[in-house]
Length: 420
Image (cartoon, rainbow, N blue to C red; front, side):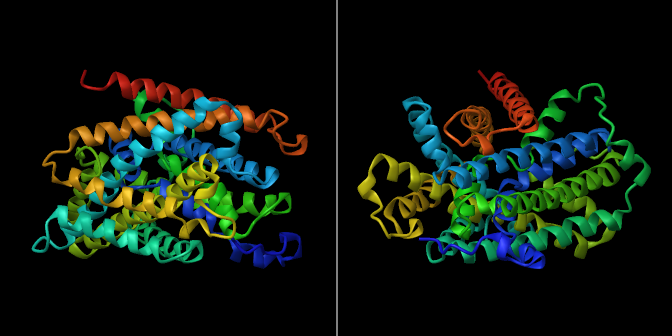
């Protein structure tokens, strides 16, 4: 079981900053290469005009992660316990979803991690080989380690992402006046779907539901840890916000003025690397590819660990004997079975020469989870399932309801865009 630390009220103020971790893990996991390229595309098309949407997106993720962490700390149960209390339909929905999503994401995550490595070493192994090696490395990192080590690995990747992406944005020298003007909500012609995607996509995946499990693994148990959890969550998404703003700067300053059109999907970041090489030289381009790898591989490690914890809780609630008392979740067979499911079956999809269907399917699957999370949290946190002290306030209700409706619109749009 996770070691319980003394409550934060016994910690010195400086010590609280040293405890920050689960929020950075969930934020870094949610911000993958796809989110970065979507932000760069928005910057390349509309300059700084949609900066306000990126900021709102970060605020929404803060509210979703805070709601998940609040449920775990206030009730002493997991988010899956909460879902079960809403009816059997949630168990069926989640069970089907997590199995299909894991198969599709496994291939997508490995492919995204392999792309920058293949670009960094053009004379080396193929993209497929790099993807497989990334998946195996993620498996090893999670299989033999507990949360504490996973957190340290993720913090290291966050550091690399921060130095590279923010450093490049500073080197480009953003237009501070235009950057400030972008905080005023404006919708240019043809920008509605880009705006919704920017709000909904940055840092938003099934791993938001893993936040409570990472909070528990950190040793934070009970309402006394609520202030620490909120500080952790806000610092994490403020850091994420810097990544997003930096990618928007890169898109606006580097691509918008040069009228560069990025390729769809994660390959768009390779285009950014080529533009950086033309303007600043090969070293800057290589550093960007290293940041690209840090963003992609941190998502792999986070998913391999966090979603496996979710699956373990799912199996444990349906089959109580599957994880005996005293056995750590990371050492249980459901956790390791899901790890293997994420790693090996999806490798077959890497043999697709043009995995367009894979990309479309992953996008649709992602769109189906976020409204489920937002609206079920809205339901759970306004009922007697949680003590009155920790129920939603007006701001939380507005954020959860608004994000739920927005995610539903994005989901419908994703389905409409399918090649029927």
